[in-house]
Amino acid sequence: MKIIFLVPTSRLRRVPLYRLCGSFYGHTNSITGPLILGRILKEAGHQVEVYEELYTTLNYRTILRGAEVVCLYAMTSTAPRCYELAGRIRAETGARVLIGGFHASALPEEALLHADQVLVGEGERVILDVVEGRITDPIVHGPCLENLDEAPFPDYSLLKTRCSTANVMSSRGCPYCCSFCTTSRMFRPYRRRSVDSVLEELRLYKSLGFQYMNFEDDNFTADPAYAKEICRRMIAEDLVFRETFFFGRTDLARDEELLDLLERAHLNRVLVGIESLNQEALDAIHKGQRLADIEACGAALSRHKIRLIASLVLGIDTDGPEDIRRAVAFAKEIGAYQLQPAILTPYPGTEVYTQFQQEGRLLDTGWEQFDMMNVTFRPKRMTPWELQQEFLRAGRTFYDLPSSFRIMKKFGLRYGLRRLGLCGTAVLGVFGEELASRFARGTCYYRLRHESGGQTVPKPRKKTAGA
Image 1 (tube, rainbow, N blue to C red):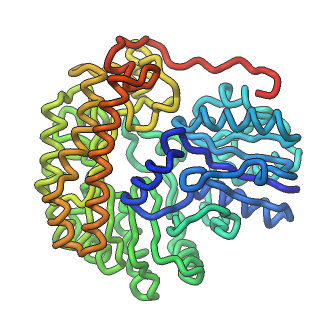
Image 2 (cartoon, rainbow, N blue to C red; image 1 turned 45 degrees about the vertical axis):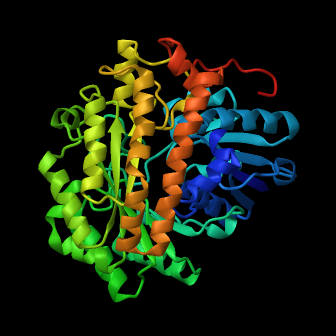
């Protein structure tokens, strides 16, 4: 049986200029879920191919030829594109359509309007039975995989679009549960793989020639002793990559031994959720960190030459424009390598979504805007348009020319040039949004600037023939 996995992306991210600008942020990588599920199907004797739209324009007429099952991965911002492709596949081919992913897991009834079956949660234990027809329920709930060592490694030979970075998940879930986070809700409870299993996967990627690697755990350093053992083994067995990215929290700065091991194992690029410099805001989103933790983290990472990506959440109820600008200035002061400003986004299934829905604060906008770059709700301390402007201002303020040359001096020419690219991207973003908000009727930016907006979230479309 020929089975295709497709990972769609939103309209903006398919624009060639956006793809070029996105290349300055980091190296190409792939979502691991389809590569894991695809391996299960491949080992059962099926022909499997995996494609991602983010980096390449796909020829669907060629890709879908002969396909019997097409599996679509839906995140909230890509759900409209996912549904569009599902309609096309069902109208033009005889293939069955399966939809899974975060959005489908949160709103399975909506996804089912566009699919033959919807997979909710983790799919390792059900994917083969669903594809081969032994499970025929319209909505299939995949049970939690208690022993993560039982999951096969992702099979990168199935991926037909470009990828320069291997992704490793040493754990699933997170011990914390921030009010806006989807990962800690889909992957419950928090579980870890054995260190031996992680190291075996790293050996595989070394043998395949990968120079870059990401630990995709929601919080790689959640268990310091576990993270230390992985790093020790990486160093001892020469499984160190040229660059390794990971997600962490400010509390990692308290452990000097951990920092030293991270540095020696080349875990040299980390995204840390600073979120806000307002303690009231941190408490409101259940972040579980103090201002002192944030201040210590920047200095500690700098000492160990670990490049900090400072993540900020813009639009928390207690924060106003002055709080956002203060946080951006702080990120510059502590020498953050990159900034990731993220507009608070009420994803379905999260606590903040329920709150805003009950308070009537969700704007009448499409799912495609739920990407942390667009305002989808009414903030308390500014208008939606003001929050949108603060998002663009954050990038433009942080990525300026002087900071690009400081990065070049500190980390080298390659990283300085990448920073210059991000500087140009920030300028283009501000210019493009300003034009769209003034003249492009029908765009989300024009509506935010000129219209009051509604109070409801998008309603699922009715099921139609071929949809």
